[in-house]
Image (cartoon, rainbow over all chains, first blue to last red; front, side):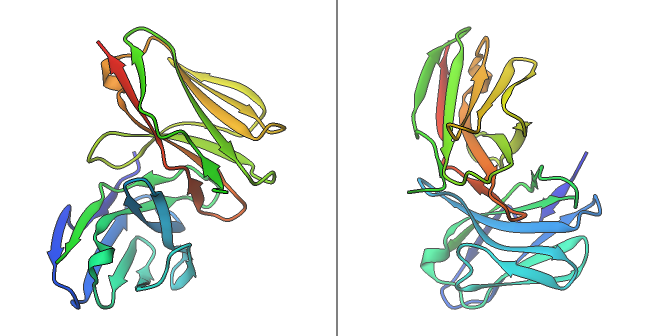
Length: 112
Length: 110
């Protein structure tokens, strides 16, 4: 079974803090994704990465950056957290020849 | 117009009935279609995918795809209370990432 793990299930941060969300997958997948999920808005793509050190902006990249130094790890960085970044953050991965995304358990981030 | 549209629900069906969930998409070039189930507070889990026009069956679940009409549906036969969840439709619109609908909440009444 594909396993995607995220560093925290719940996180509370203050406005202006730098926040790191970590995602690790154990299936040697090339592609990894960060989404945020908000009520009524569904899942929205923030960034994705198709290889080590390669990244592409998704639909809502503003206020976020990412890092992929190793194939199994994809980090989402909130440079200066704001209250409108309070959300559920979901990481996902897929192999190069598939579109079947597998999700991690999610991190519920609250910015106060 | 949203790229992937779903009725938010809730869709309420009695136990044992067929639940029918629908999804429309705007990009005619879309090639692959997915249904995810998401329980409250949990992450989405993949339950079905379909690439070709027609029906695809997997146990109590049937996915139906009509590319000419740009809709994909999910039928759940013999619905159980444990099927109560939000069902997300996702479409590959030409990039590696999927585009998700907002989801339909299904309630199965015992």
